[in-house]
Image (cartoon, rainbow, N blue to C red; front, side):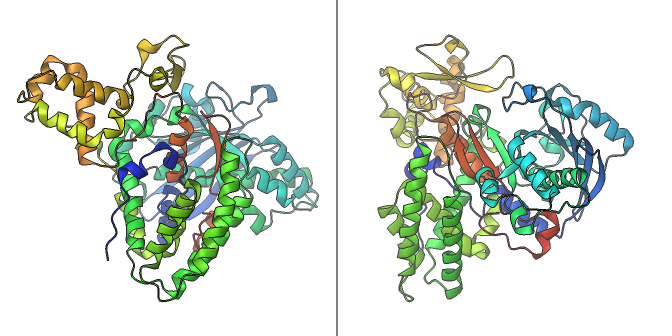
Length: 550
């Protein structure tokens, strides 16, 4: 039996993308499986922190071929300087993933630069740059509880979920660190964002080591470490805003590969003719674990919280329905998915996708090797095709865009631009704010139909090369149409400059691919998440199973 992939008109809508959940294909899960499979060894190489927890630490990671280090700097940050905004210039902690183990001279160089982040100067050995702020209330509460010989209250830990939250994790040559090409051929970093995921995993270890260190300094005779089960409930928080949103638009081939892998995995599972007793039991266990996680997922966002409440109800219905599947039902996973699609909301449908993949690692995990992309592969334009040929492709691939009324002010209410201060993407209100002349070329829902109109004014047989020679401003739009025609999941099939567009849908899609949990929108333009909550720590990895929460 074969099952068709879900069509792009279903998958690539912002509402569904904004309901995605982490799966076993997510980048952090792939990194953890590799680390376990290859028996990576993590040691605390240097711990030079004072009684208040200020100083530096080095965690060394030995992979089969190389050693990397997380170098962490913990500083005394005055409360008035603590902010998650990108304009911040100081943080509680700053980090670099270093290629090798730094000697004292390198530690001195890094100390002079890493806490300055964007303002620092870096070398080709500096692979990833990050910074984080404490969740001050939880950090202090945990430290005092441990110092008194007690464990922190589990409900408080669950309500926050992290001791520190990062405000950026930079890679790919930003601010002078190593270019992506310097590490792309290394197996451990060949997949998307693997170096970034390793960095965050080690930051998590540092945060719990730091709070235990502080507890011992407060009361060396009574302090206790975190209980292992409670320790696992700490992840790393992250505050993510508009700076990440255009990434999916600017990297269409990469987006296609991510979504294609996910849809291929789902189709493979749905095509299974039978469900084994083991896979049924695994599905039930993962569904129960997800339901428990959803009980702890809360937000003040008036849009997301009702969705979470509905998801809890839908998950109970999904579990109950799955429990009634006849043992001999043909293609049971396909039947379960089709039931979910017909009876549950988007949040629960996408949760069902994640759950269906969980028992079937042997069937789908190889798809993690397909998540990368050489985007030059999609960069060419076939100049020999005619204007009529390109017009036909637009008609075939962009019906969703052609249905948007170009005269509707709400359909063009916004514009994307880069801030002068930080060169970060921002979203302007076209009819209320100046700066539309600085708009970045991300509005393909508007520009592709405009290109179609221009093509139809030309002779049908005119070669595209001649058209673009005369009208070079259309080159990037023509290239986009060619990409969409070849890679069906490359284009987000919604209006990204419309008044109703919620940028956090873009953020959630990308963050779900990272492996994020507990999406907490703080507006329609930024949100907080948790990474690695429930995952094993380095010293636990050999004995662990990488469960759904990882």
